[in-house]
Length: 295
Image (tube, rainbow, N blue to C red):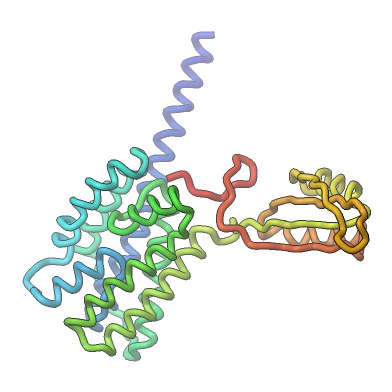
């Protein structure tokens, strides 16, 4: 018994170490991508950035002698003070590590891109930054800044991460319009929009859940097929047809994006005349089918 307990403890320690290393790897990769977008595209083109980094770039353009990496680190201090109260401790400490890694990446991660077109530059920067931000949020932390605010709003009000970032960035753009040419601000808006879309795609991606509602006279047969073939739970709701006045069984289930085509094919096989409604979900909380990151 004692030997078995030691093996379990050793296995748990190994799993914990592996999880920590994986999260640090994701934070490092995401930070490097974001830093390359800033140093290699945004600054050479005079664009702003998203989130707190946008404010940092405004200060850098006004006072070029101030290093971007040091500014980002210092401006994150009050954000992390607020984060200690509103986000989980695990997310807080991983974000602290991520912010430190990102600040370091800003200091040394430089890469120039040969794109001469401003629109192409904005698009490429948005792709790199959105992918980097999404990768960091796939970990258990972030790179600090508005990521902490985004997670707090997601947990409390179910506001999507990209939506919060887009709203905050609009305020940064208004501030930037006071100091930068309007053309630069408009290109930055394109960059921010693309970044927000890519971020949402990376964070949810194929984990996007679909809610399926089915009304059919063969509801029990469809329910059994979903349970047996797809191993997904089904809830049977009691309804009534407004025109016919007949009692109806309404099936409700949630599946991932990859399972949706199989579900629709299964329904057609059992009842080609079934009434089916497929809806997007914002987030799903459940151990089996849930897709909400645990921040």
